[in-house]
Image 1 (cartoon, rainbow, N blue to C red):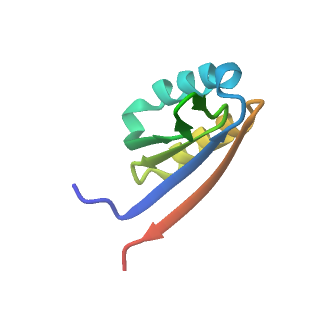
Image 2 (cartoon, rainbow, N blue to C red):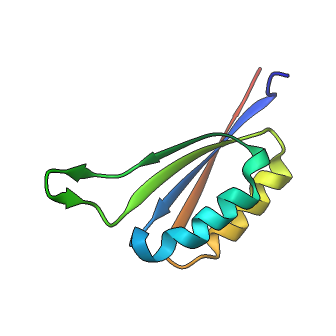
Length: 88
């Protein structure tokens, strides 16, 4: 069924080695509400950034998306922003 809206959460994780386990637990808990997940971080020869960005496309159940946002935002080292695109 087509989505009526796109709900995207941008999750910025500081100090990934220490903070990613809590993020991963929540993403697993909300797994059935996540359509797409993309992880981004800077890496190169001899370098791997301690910070990362995860983009999550949610189903169009906004209360569920807001619940995940609230729980992620309560974690240390995590910043979350939400984008919503309605279909006209």
